[in-house]
Length: 281
Image (cartoon, rainbow, N blue to C red; front, side):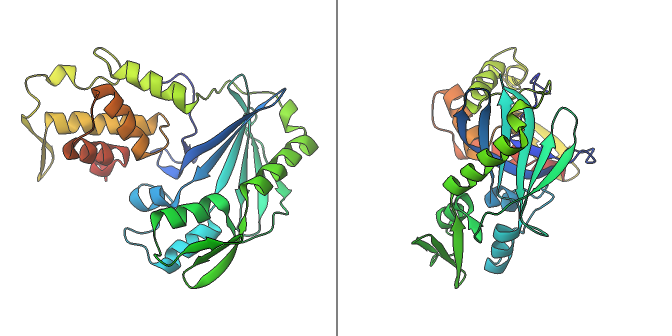
């Protein structure tokens, strides 16, 4: 592991020895209060379509009914409570078998469940993703409702979710919980670390050792061949995922900044393969 702190760009099961992600997530906002910070995160449907290693992998070409079921039933948002970048609690909103807050004390690993009275069918972040991804070209949002798959869903707004989370924190004293030794960087800090470690001699420098031999052929496994450059890009993409980069697009942006130019199609393809660990299936 490159970093000395744990990132929550991906959430893993403690029983999963292969560290296959349960959910892939993106950080959506960070709020600072007097005695704690609150980081909001969203579990994307897209990553659970693209990434076959996800334990909630939907389908390579999911139907609208499969997307609807996943959008409604799978957790959408989770929150990290921190002080000085050290995590004290993780708060997850689950929908099945009933909607509830799940609070995990990161220091003790104790898990508690609390009633959640948020009303609605689908979260704002998920509704927005459905529109942006164009799963259904007829989908639209009007007056607090998502119209999708010939159905209507009431949207749970980010504002209402945030109010409910802050109320839970105050009521249960989660802002006073002892912090763990686990630290998380901001995505900006993570990007800077990855850029530094990708430079010559860094822990993510997979490129210096293959200079002059970038296009030499190598066999990955029986019947599958690539070049040393392809493998280097793959390893780099995989490392960014493992270290908590939120999305494939974020990995592209970091590598483009490192190269000082737009990425070509070959670079994008191999970084994508690595980010999704496609060659390890």
